[in-house]
Amino acid sequence: LDVIKRSKTPRVNIKTMADRASFPILKNSVILQIMEEVEIPLTEAELVEPGRCRERVREVFARLLMLCWGMTTESSLSTLPSRITTTAQSTFTHPELYVDALPEIKFFCLLSKLMTICGNADFGFKDLQAPQSKRFKRQLSAVINFLKFKEDMQCLVEQGQEEREELFAAMDEVTLQCAALEEELDKAKRLNQSKMLERDQAMAECKEMEADIAQQNRKQASIRQETYILKKSANELKDQIANLSISLRELQAEERQLSKEVVDSPDSIKFELATAQQTL
Image (cartoon, rainbow, N blue to C red; front, side):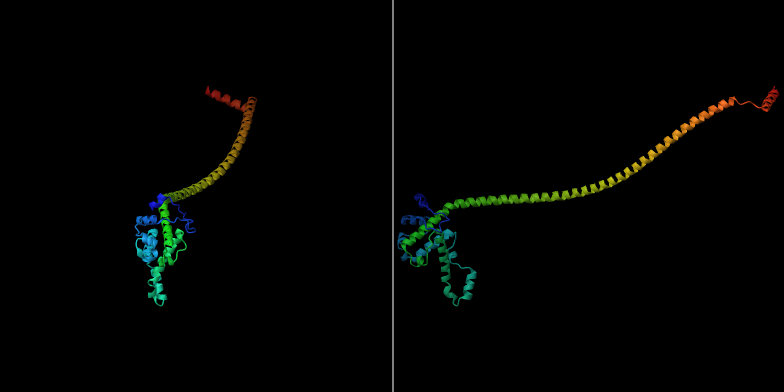
């Protein structure tokens, strides 16, 4: 892959790779060098005359598939899911006839999908059964271009994964903060409910006090009215007493005046003289 870096050959965008075959057709020496770098055995004779070594061509494609899809064992390319095996045994009259065909079909489907992604959409069974040098070089060039593109995008993938991990960590932190805030909110709600009960109790007490104050105000108003009436009566009595005092004094003065004008009777004078003689 370093050869492509040095040669500065153009690469296609991943969005258009499956739509247009716009990848460079590499030279034989470049293809062989890159195959050596990725540890996939391939000789110049096999590259020039692939029709003479179909098994080696299949092996090269298998190794490329494993490299592109990240597989570790070649058996993954041909191993069928258990449901397909079960269906084949229960559906086909002679399932043993398909023991080799079905894994080969799976291998071809994976390889055809890879070629389509790489921009080489005309890949067919003939390229495995009767490979041609020109088409083989074109197919290898397409996959190598895809590998180069994948290598260049790996840093972006790793960066995206790091950012994703950071986002997940931030999300976990936000989740913890949210849980803490929810707990504080629950506490605040409970406290607020307690305060509301206290407020309702205080308001009820205030209403009772207001009722008592209103009753006391009514009593006080009644007492004030009674006091006003009593004061009024007392003032009237004072006026009456003052008038009676004046009348009494007038009568006493008149009595004193009349007492001066009163003459003693003869009998009382005789009695007083007799008493005085006896005393002498």
